[in-house]
Length: 404
Image (cartoon, rainbow, N blue to C red; front, top):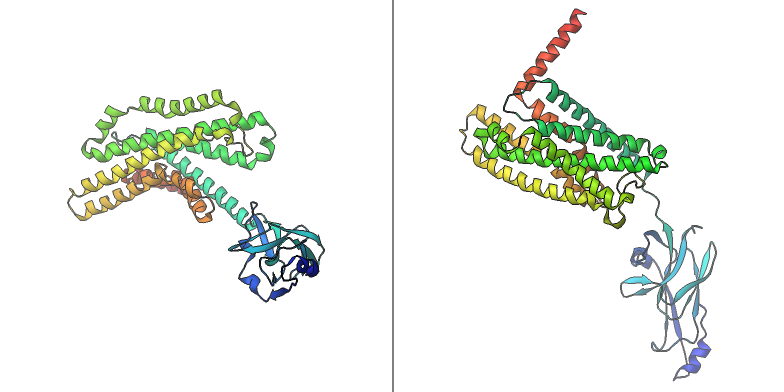
């Protein structure tokens, strides 16, 4: 420590001055560098032991700054930034302290007051582990591909199998079409992003089409929620109520027109809002709410419908006789209802809570890429008539193979 005690003594009423200089062993493990709060997100490393200096009279003012030559206790990172800090109640701060000079083995700090000091090095945080990023990308790729496969299987089943006259699959078919096209386009865009990004017009068009496809998917989820609510509320009059309230033509107009109007208005008001770095909607000027706004409204309505469906279903099931066959059907119906939480898009609510949580991000990714899987499972695999048609198809396929 370099301090001018003679000048301090001259200015002191007692005409004397004394200073205590101490170095603490392992105190840096208690007063950790993480207590050094900075605006930028960096890794902080304690580069010195904690030292302390104090004058005999605490109210004595320094005549000039005090210099401390501090030895490094860890290897110096050339790209790091050193800060001379002092302890203030509950955190490390730099007020009144600065770095005079530094090399690989020591640093000279200058401070205008005495206190408890240390030397902290800041280094930029390394990017997330490449292995973790690669794992998330692989998981995303696999989940989206699996979802696309089951969307396709569900569409083939809806198109080729014979359904009961009272079953209305219009909403489910269009959910599959919208989300199949949206996920496929998004997957291809991300795979060829380097080629697409330089072409701004193409990137903007893709983001606009994605906006339309995802929105139409959500509108169809809302329509499906309405139909399901009618089914559960009027179990004895399912088909007639569906025809009374929502016919196929009216549903198609609503399902695609709402999304088209939202996109058209968005393009008219702020055409520059399309074509971000990821070929998606830009967040500038709150333009992202042209997508999030309608989605939030639809998710809120779907949650209300879902809760009402659970309440009405519970009331209806209490009226059934607890026979074995009926209990089995009851369990299937309960499972189908719970699966509707994903089919109706309610699991997208998780997207608002994934910040900083990899577990929620993975759960969000898995659930929302598998809407096609849930649709195929609930409406195709768990449908007794459709399972019988599957068996006939495979029997024909196997018998045909044996003949060859």
